[in-house]
Length: 141
Image 1: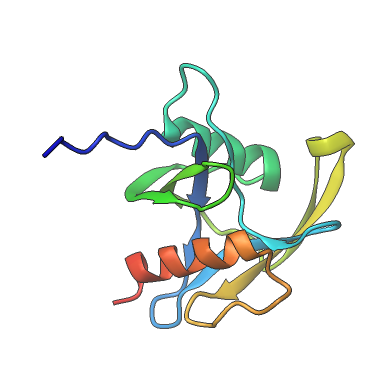
Image 2: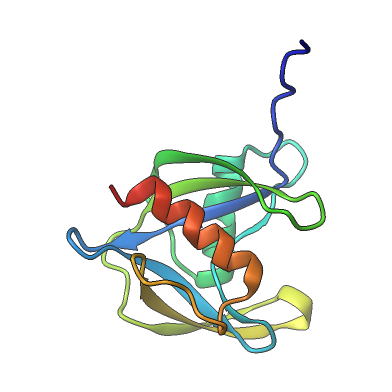
């Protein structure tokens, strides 16, 4: 039997949570593509941890103090994308806000907190529905 080839992620997803009993996860509404989580491409020579911190800053405006845990690697089932999830610490994030990003010529992303125990509905892009389930399995005991 051949040994398994290690998975190499091409996408990084910073996971920001709040709450202790009822955990909420940082999410946003994309003006064209529904509800999503922050994620982006890992650049050449960049670690997935560094990419997660950069993507969080670029897409939300939040600056994480550090990555407190690696949550694993997920095969998304879309375009051979493999995602690395990293739990990021942010001091006192706001309740909600909008952030202008330069993605695709510029978009305003509306950020909010989503209960991680809640089943994602059709407002969520299907790819992020799977990502939420993966994260919930890692964080909800």
